[in-house]
Image (cartoon, rainbow, N blue to C red):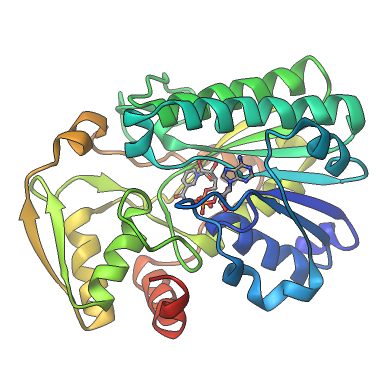
Length: 328
Ligand SMILES: NC(=O)c1ccc[n+]([C@@H]2O[C@H](COP(=O)([O-])OP(=O)(O)OC[C@H]3O[C@@H](n4cnc5c(N)ncnc54)[C@H](O)[C@@H]3O)[C@@H](O)[C@H]2O)c1
């Protein structure tokens, strides 16, 4: 399947981060010629160690996706562009909205303008979030559901998606818009708890700390293992019929936070959990139960997640046990 990328030129914005680095590793494996760009903004997800195993096989350009001249240059000759550079901290977006507006919205516009003027043949994969829906009207949530995002981060991602859609529809820059659920696995930032809830729980369990479950722990999510997520990106990108479309990328089996904590502690053989009240900032942004309807991507692209929660957590734990010093 990933043979479609053999010899192809691929640009990954935000490629030093969690998803971008995992994607880069799979693309190198598939024989692609990968260029990574990342601004390495302190406190964000960029980590040089994330690409340690492919360091000599990728081109790295430390630059900002908002830099018009650099992006105009970098998009030339690329076959595929995976756009993952972004401010992803939901909590921060509610105290300071400007990084989201500037990076997620303007950065996307800079990239799409660069494609329009310098490489309209490039195929763009935009990475958005299930947060764009806001509270679910009915479950599971499909792509036709209304979008009423509750936070600035989520609004910025929805706006960026709509910008990408305009360049697809009006300017002919073929693009796919993915809306990811909560993804977990190796190479995520582990220094703070403001985003990546599953990975934060993994850190607490590995350090034999207490995981706090907000409310009564029965809230549902579809936690997706990073390898499955990357495979969705690759399969969508390789599928002609996927261009111009929005797809959910999630898991068809929801899990409660309590089940997550129990499986995690069981697999890690360390850690504890307790109930705790929502913090005010979490309560303000909490959309309640969410899980994705993935019928569309399964039917059109043929992608299906294959990693059970316990196995994904096992792999995640193995990675951070071995490389903990590079993450916290
Ligand atoms: N991880 C998830 O569960 C999840 C879920 C839904 C959507 N997403 C989306 O996927 C994308 C990647 O998320 P991630 O989890 O890998 O986050 P991450 O923070 O690990 O990676 C983002 C990368 O973008 C880089 N970056 C930030 N601003 C930049 C700028 N101005 N110029 C260039 N690079 C910049 C950061 O340095 C970081 O390396 C984001 O757009 C995020 O909104 C992630």
